[in-house]
Amino acid sequence: MSSRVDLLRVSPKAVEELISFREFMGMSGLSERLVALVKTYVSEVNNHAQVGVLRREAHDAGESEQRLASLSRWRQLNIFTQRERAALAWSDCVTATPVRVSDADYCAAREWFTEQELVDLTVVIVATGAYNQVVLSFSNQHADSALPLAVPKCSP
Image (cartoon, rainbow, N blue to C red):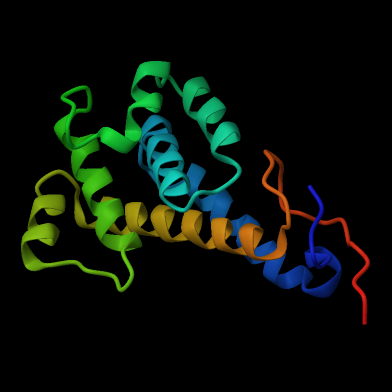
């Protein structure tokens, strides 16, 4: 993947912080499978190029191909647990522009997640969205890869 700026050279601290967000996701206390499902879903919503990589990670965490292929239709299908559906609904609320979390949305999420889990889930959602936005902003191609670091030549 080529990019428009060498992120690591220009802002190593920013890249470090982005990576620390990703590391947090693995230590959040939420199941690896749920985190992988949410990361894949949020990336699909954001039309992120790394959906293929995230699907492989989700598959490695125990997700089935059928469920991963059906993520965009999760509301219409009964193949997700109530807890997963609550996480996906919360993802929709948190990724909406502007963010729209009603009292009913909050209460529905709290029915399935402790306060700590809901905070952790929200950070996973926001971190995934931030990662997606940084990569998509500085990339001029869609491909399954890590943070873009190659630098194209631009005309003055």
